[in-house]
Image 1 (cartoon, rainbow, N blue to C red):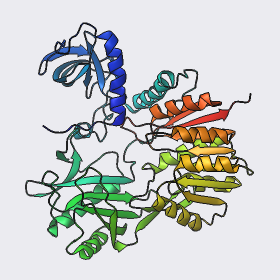
Image 2 (cartoon, one colour):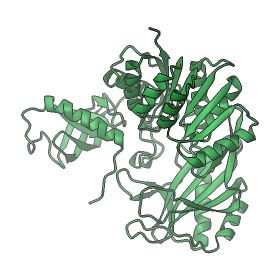
Image 3 (spheres, rainbow, N blue to C red):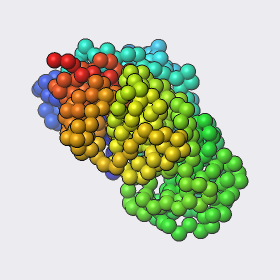
Image 4 (spheres, rainbow, N blue to C red):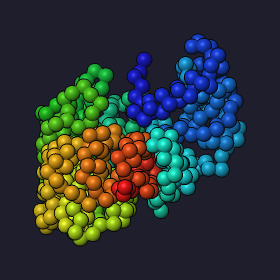
Length: 486
């Protein structure tokens, strides 16, 4: 039996459903469901889950159905049943939604590369706005907060500046593609639809070079073989390209020669790196890397500033929309030349350095030492003199700054999906900034944190969703929180 990997949000969503089902499904015993595995049913799709799956109800029993949209009537086959909900797949569409659009390649849905590719882009933007509104009502208990229409792209395809592509052996040769959803079965794919077209073109070239040199693919089950992933980063403006070859072992026969051939066949490549990951793990990158060709980074521009981007650096994968996201954040902040700003979760400095020329001083904090080193290099590259970047946990440094009397006018936060630590929220409120600008990649934790900030005297004025990830259910938001005067 294959292991099933669901996101943290999926389980949070299911727990909420479970609580609701305790009320709705009284009378259904643990072994008596209104549907059975392999049964075919006709049902109407009434809603979408936060992951874009169609939701149907059979006698109050919930079924999640891929590639199904509200208003559609489908004949579906039940794949799995459980105490609170089940899963099914569409066998036939009896009616279709006006929001449905043709999908360039069904593998985009099967793998989860573009799980909303069957939905018109206008509908995707509305879906994302509604998702944010729902969590602000249900989690934050702040239904009055305006959630503005999602800011989308003119061309919502081929936007990703980074690709992480698994490599496996199929029919005796190296293949690249993506895993079938909830499995590690590789489906060969050449056009990934949402990636930079130049990256898509480069992947098979690199794969074929490695094939010519006899490089063996990684076997995940046996933890054998050599090449695990090909990672490519490409500067949106600079067009500099980095190729990272993730290997199971350090010894790499003819590695320098291979790297030189990659550059010869792909002149945009300015960096070829071997990353070594010897662990039996789903984590892609290992701790050790070797530069095989060129430099150990690429450079690109964001809002007029230049940034060095290394293999493990966090850098927004949609440069065009990241500029819109950050500009929206700066507009919300109403920055003044005398402002002192804290940039929490500062990464390589993309937010703080982009606004540094608008304020008196920027204090950045980041827990990853390598990212702070990158931020300091980016300070030098851009000739900026009014920043301070420190290594540490945001909640600890925030508490320290609060004790030391640092009084920021504005705090920017851009945390990971888990959101903010409660200690950070308390310490941030103690420093009493006029405004807190919250950039979020997870509306559920944004809503949770907005509720905590409200208890400490901060009002969420508005939230602006920005679509950094078209064709997927992921949502980026900017929230403005202001201190309420008592």
